[in-house]
Amino acid sequence: MNATNLVMQSYGRCCVSPTFFDDFYQHFLASSLQVREKFATTDMTAQKTLLRQGILNLVMYARGMPDTKLKALGESHSRMRLDIRPELYDLWQAALLRTISEHDSEYNEEVRTAWRDVLQKGINVIKSYY
Image (cartoon, rainbow, N blue to C red; front, side):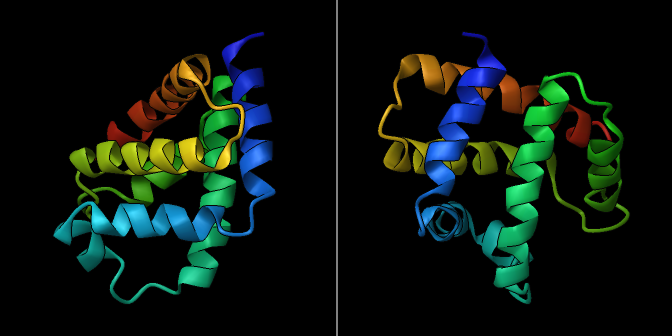
């Protein structure tokens, strides 16, 4: 099975869990004071909806969808706007992989590698706008 199919199946298993997105933000916010500061005034309910769509956009880009949405995200997160430093995406990815490992009953090294490869492709587009 290819990486994007493995990731889509894994993501489906994670999204069934009612605490998946809350657990992700718990891990992500715990990863750095800078991350906590960036989210200090954020509407977390709305943010979880954006996260759900953002992950899907990363997967769809890896499947061959145009990078239009990732470019827009890169622009909104650039140093001139939200100023999300490139290294924060590494913390984001680590928190996401940790959360997936806790919520996907079929998580293993193959699934982890698929997620890393799929996410990194889109994250590189977003980082390029910083």
